[in-house]
Length: 181
Ligand SMILES: [Zn+2]
Image (cartoon, rainbow, N blue to C red; front, side, top):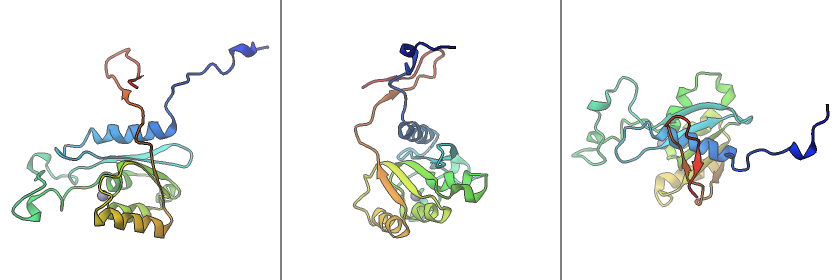
């Protein structure tokens, strides 16, 4: 059988890159969060580009969302969300039901640079690269501690370009994904 060479390689040109796909999954996961102020998603990917796990910031299992203190401020720290909420990165690590050894060498996509608590979990899980979008808390001690931890422990950090494409994802039937930029 002969294939006309002109018919080869006519693939779509605007398909999603792996980075766009996985950060897109992280962002879509963030859409599950019930936190009124901050929605963060995470997606853990193997070195062969298979999705291993996803997570978003939320309440611990069995903690009723409707009885959760979602506020950022209160009379005491324990009246705010901070001591209780599970971050997206930690949830993604703990949601993984396969062998822990699969996480070695994996990368984690997050839309916000990880806090120092999640940084420790990422390191201990054996994840080797953090791919992130926003670094809006770069000046805070927590984020600076995260960066020191990652650097010292050999976890690569890579920020995706801030001028990424805007994707329109319709959930209506027969409407394809489209790009607004
Ligand atoms: Zn965190």
